[in-house]
Image 1 (cartoon, rainbow, N blue to C red):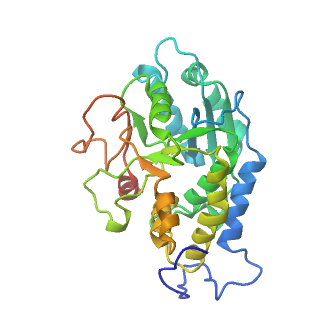
Image 2: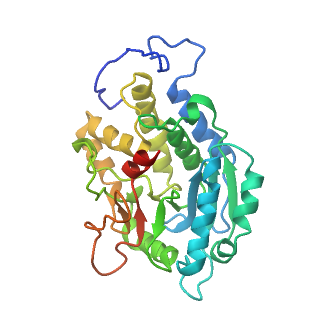
Length: 316
């Protein structure tokens, strides 16, 4: 491994899973579990009509728990009202991929694929399920395991798409034509980056370690073999070890920043840092009312809002 661990902890509380030292040999490690999620996504990966090798936006991904399907449909209603994804007259160029934590994808598909704005804005609709259960589906304050596993599954499932935009249900467009603008953002800003997204601009608390991190609602170059190799052979081993040793239960986006800061090989770290970039296209704030840090300028700045994890935690 080319990272350094921040501490060696084997302490187990009554509410924790066993650490590496105490875990029974028949319980898979988090590396094994998270890698299995990635591979499960690859096994059901849909194929776009026109795969691209270059950085081209080909899909919008909406990750959902079963209770959030209604939130997604409400968002579609808003899009239809005055926030239509495409500019007038433009033909659909991207797929919509909905990734459920578990449950029946057919039931969710009926509510999603039949919506008029979805039919008019996307080439195809795919509804997948990661089949997460128990500890692997946890998402509460201090434990983002479920969200992480859903993301790892999603990365595997999107391997045939050049670039996808991940939008949780608390991401809202600020103007019509936002999906068309997103395609231009990818074409003009993505370059050779693997991840392009928002730096936190809100006024809520955040540890200094994470000021630079790229929020998970971002553009991902999922079709890059180098990106896939990075996840399977570098990031997931780091994530799995840190998880099993109880160093953190942070979300995958914060874990990216921890990983980048833990490298002993600084030359390699600098290369990886260049693959994670910021854009003002997505604005990551504490709430939609906090607009003090909204970028004001020309081009495609400030097209999507994200309320941010702190707001979600305060209302969960």
